Amino acid sequence: MKEVNITELERMFQEKIDQDIKIEPKDWMPDDYRETLIRQISQHAHSEIVGMLPEGNWITRAPNLRRKAVLLAKVQDEAGHGLYLYSAAETLGADREDTIDDLHSGKAKYSSIFNYPTLTWADMGAIGWLVDGAAIMNQVPICRCSYGPYARAMVRVCKEESFHQRQGFEIMMTLAKGSPEQKAMAQDALNRFWWPALMMFGPSDGESKHTAQSMKWKIKRSTNDELRQQFVDVTVPQAEMIGLTLPDADLSFNEATGHYEYGEINWAEFWEVVKGNGPCNKDRIDTRRKAKEEGQWVREAATAFAQKRAARKSA
Ligand code: BYC
Image (cartoon, rainbow, N blue to C red; front, side):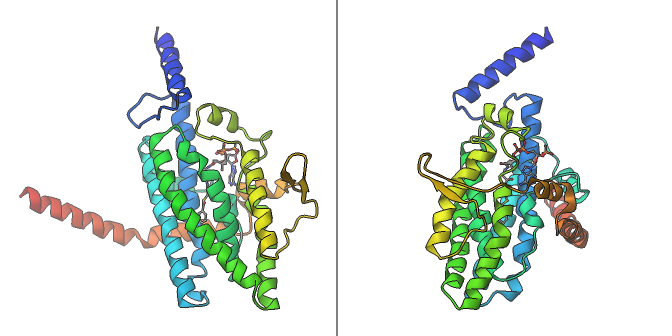
């Protein structure tokens, strides 16, 4: 009897999804839908927070006050995105502390891209242009995600990412038009970040274990390969416009399909980074763990203050 009820609930749930009716926190949902969302949203939150580190590394070394103010604002925006996303995961019953502990223990994933080092100022340009560019490509469809709180969080996130992408492109454009050394620095950053940016979209469709179900539930609205192709198609002309060369000898425009064809992604490298063996994985997690430890006194003081205030109010 119970089984029949669940099947019926699942049928009604899928009907709502098919009609583009948003699922809200108190609505019934299958356990797997909830788990998939908690997994994706918490990974997304961790990516925003860990994603602050490679750029945070350059705040003190920005080349002028304007660049410093912009970079500071961008890194703060990423913290805000992380907080919306942790809150969205909480609406599904996830415990924020547990989620963060999973990041610190190495159990939870975050975007592979943030395990690469930022070696020069041009990397701030490459990250804004390519990494935020890829993030927008991936996140705009999530504004139409079936889960209301995630979809709504993405609307604001995408507006801010769009500003981030432009500031990155502007840095690259300025360097590409600068001295030969500046142009070489921009080219080197592009060479190092191009392939990792393509990897951000995840494994190819044939290898992606979650895509089919996530598309059915409208958690994902496009496949990994579809989004990767869209990113390549918009980014290649931008590189040409600023006179930089993409590090892919196989890149060519296919007149028949209207798309750029690109070379083979190094999937062995991708999976190594995802497994924790990228150039900066250890450093990123150690930094986050240390930040939590060093912030312990702030959390304790804030809790003590809140408790004292509540006690005073009730007295
Ligand atoms: N890195 O079946 P698949 C930002 C994992 S932050 C690491 O295709 P799914 C920004 C995947 O989790 C941008 N792991 O999975 C911040 C899965 O493992 P599990 C972050 C990856 O979920 C600061 C397995 O591989 N954006 O914009 O259907 C500064 C199989 O993959 C990656 C988001 O998080 C990867 N690249 O699709 C600047 C967007 N790719 O969980 C910028 C939301 C795959 O089974 N997330 N894996 O152990 C998504 O759209 C999807 O989760 C993904 C993966 C497209 C990433």
